[in-house]
Image (tube, rainbow, N blue to C red; front, side):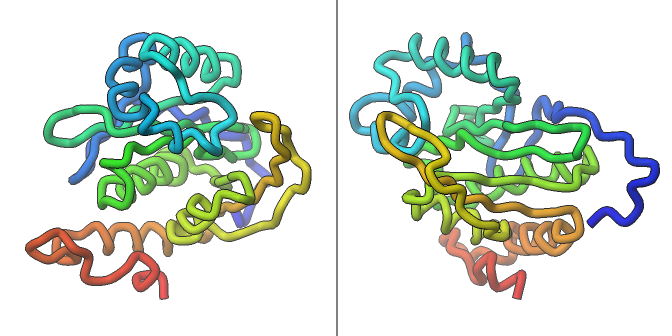
Length: 224
């Protein structure tokens, strides 16, 4: 943990505007403008499963998605972002900084909705790296959280793969879409970030991928 808190004065709220990596670009969401693009990859009956464990959605139209996400982000004081294709800037998904507590140096990454084109790609991993990097390297936060429905096995596997430590389950934490939700909690703290960062950067390096874009070593291998 941060060794000396005698002079702790909190940190700024997340304020990442636009950042580019090798595989993706992340822009601050402007849902009134981004609703149509996001709906094209996250909307429609074929994508209803993407919203299974999100407390709201799916949305029936682009206008509803833009208005709904804009309202939720504003009322909950989220910092929301669109993940884009690096070459075309087409939207591929979204995520938000949530439960932002600058006085404690803590924030959550959540409402992560990735299109099927983005899932299981280097761009998806790079996006999560860039979100974490802003929290720890730019802002000097002490804690970075990931929470999900305990039934969401894919999200729990993703958290562990990305270097988050499992902390436990809050039983009967919420009622979501008429169902009980037990919430699984994960985190990375500041002293764990250097190792996680090194693993991300080594995994994302060009020489970790073959000519067909397949990884040579897994992300977990670089943390071993």
